[in-house]
Length: 379
Image (cartoon, rainbow, N blue to C red; front, side, top):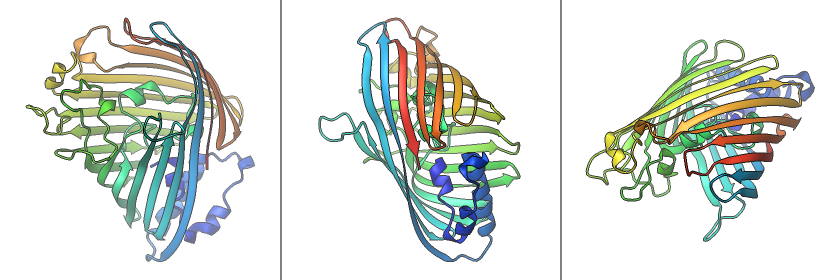
């Protein structure tokens, strides 16, 4: 669930507690505040269920300017209102809620336009008890660092990192049902059964990202499942591991079923001004996909991102990424990218970004190098 989605699960019963939340000048981070609210909600979940009827609205948005030279093709010099997302949440009772996100990408949608209108989340969630919740509907898959928490003020860099874009593939949502909660102090889990990816036979598509159906008259001949465990028992630390299983990427439309497993591990740590994020993800896919593209049976990547918060408003970062959507062949198909830059938070929820990227691409492929500028916000 996104940062907003997690925070808005505070019920009207907790309104007094929320009102007493530390002001911006206290130095309390958004993550700390969310954790505090979640603790209050967990305590409230043990009380008898009562009606609430509260509705809340939020949003996030990003504007990007890319000035990138391409060694092997047209340069990328464009300005784009990349996304505008409206988030609507309603509390039926202190245990039952509805969460939704409606997104407009690239400013304009419709025939011949670059953008799309997408329903990114729309699910009902119910707290069975203080440690267990269930949900059903359309939701973000619990995998990686960014897929559930990708508001622009929560990460470094103008663009989302290329590993979680090309391998995970963020932003990734499906329809289904799931359960999650606490295993032990500091340990949590999520498990979901949901709709699957679809690489249409004969289309030439082999990259996992191309298989996102976005629950739009999606083929459901076969399904998928995701499981994740996380450890957050040490202040400032998150360790996570997830597995996703696709029973057939071809959705019964090919002669042979193409099953696939995604394995992902990540770590995020912050101590004082220092921070670091690291993630590794790998798809292991049935050999039949190699008939579409040699080496597509393995698609993997990793990144490491250290950062340093100079003060409340300024932060520096560097990120090294490698990814390969045809790693199984051992040919020259790997991409590498180095990003360095700065974030400036005018407000904890309003951020300006500047970064420089340098890319090393396979022979003949587009290879972008240059500057990205961005502004983003969430509330």
